[in-house]
Image 1 (tube, rainbow, N blue to C red):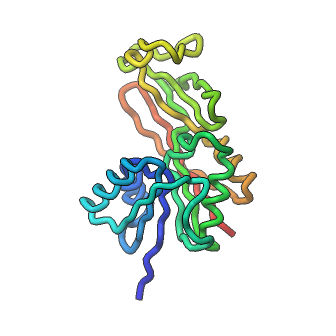
Image 2: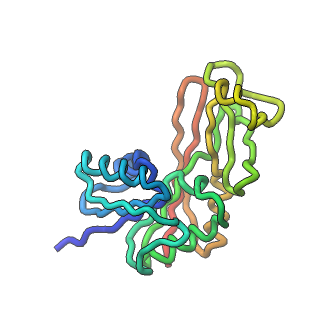
Length: 209
C-alpha cells in the first residue's frame, strides 16, 4: 500500500502558489497537504480551492512559529514566498520549527522573489525596518523608467497610486539563514518576463539530516 506523503504549507495564503508549486516541482498525486496560516479567511479560501482542484488537503489557523503537530511527522515543508510575511519574530524560529516537524531526510522548500530588473538593470530595493527579511521595490505601473533616487515616503498616499509593491526576501539572505539553522541549501532559479521587467525567483531546497 502506498503511503501518502504529508506536505505542510506554511503561510499558505490563498494557496495559489501551492498549486503552482505542486504542478511545477512536486506531484499532487499521493500527497496530503496541510496548510497553515494566521488568517482564518485564507484558510477557508484555500480549503475551497483545494476542493475545486480535487486536492486532499486540510487547513489550520495557527502561529507558524508554534506548529500544532508532533515532531518528525512530515515528509515535506514548504514556505512558498511566505517567509517575508512572517513578521514579528526572529525568522530563524520559523525555520527551526519547520525542521523539527520534518522526518529525517525530509525536504524543506523555500521560494521567493530575489530581485526585479528593468531592461537588464536591477531595481533598487528598500529595507523594511519592521522585519529583517522583508524588502520592497517600488515598480511603476506604466512602462516609464522605474529608477528613483531615494526611498519613497511610506505615508504618502500617492505612492499607492503610482507604484506596485513587490516584497523581496533575497536568496543569499535566506540561504544564510538555512546555513545558520544547520542545513545545506541548494538553489534553482526561474525568471519570468513581463514587458521590460524581469522577475527573478528562487527555489531553495534543504534536506533534514
